[in-house]
Figure 1: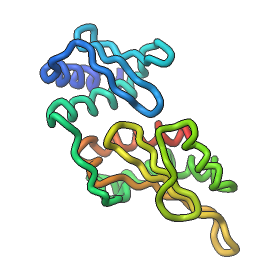
Figure 2 (figure 1 turned 135 degrees about the horizontal axis):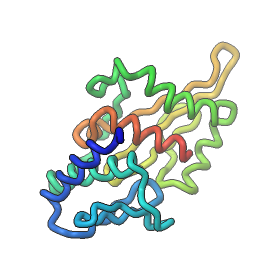
Figure 3 (figure 1 turned 90 degrees about the vertical axis):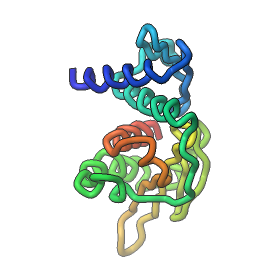
Figure 4 (figure 1 turned 45 degrees about the horizontal axis):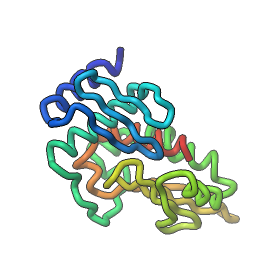
Length: 185
């Protein structure tokens, strides 16, 4: 029931903006079919309904895309989660749900992060010892960078976003999207 209000609002926004009954959108390595009349979102890769949190992300993304007629251009400026509205207050939870997950999985082998580019819409990039730029949606890059442990410090990681993300998603959506990305690494 927690997602119901967000889903209702998302569908209402899309219905008022969409000029097509069927819309297709890519999220990570899957394409989803959004039927605005039936209010269904189906994964094309496995022919099952999208989970509620994925549906909300897709509806919010499509709402911006339809409202703006195209996505905001990339700025080339990477920002930290703390720079998003309310990011500082929510950072401990964000770190636990995303950055700590990356460290747990790749902290002892940062080069393993680079191999994820073979199965995700991502490419090598960024600084540090290992970095990738994941593109979960068109026009929405997420930079994940890792540093190896040394004699003084343990491994570390950071996640950055193109500054345009604040024009596309609210901070809560950024958390959910980033968590979705890191759990597929």
